Length: 139
Image (spheres, rainbow, N blue to C red):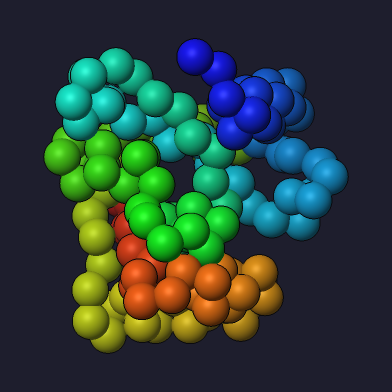
């Protein structure tokens, strides 16, 4: 079954690949990557376009789900199977994902909210859910 979210993501993925990792529209100034995960239950490959924050050791992505009260499916996939592949710009890289915690999470999350105001809004609408910060490091 194809959902509106799936169609939206498929268009972003196609644009990302056609334009060397750049996407226009509402994402024009936002750095993006494509995160490849394996379904936690199905084992099927999934690809999700995500905003990222560059880190010295890799990249941070955010399980914001637009401020929904639950985590996105890709987050559960990463927790179950942290060996991932990412597409950044024109590169495809093997990587490992981990959930940031404590001071590391707070530092990355605060920087993201300061640089992209929409993430502060996501935090407000997520209610009691703490939005997970995922650090992705090259394997």
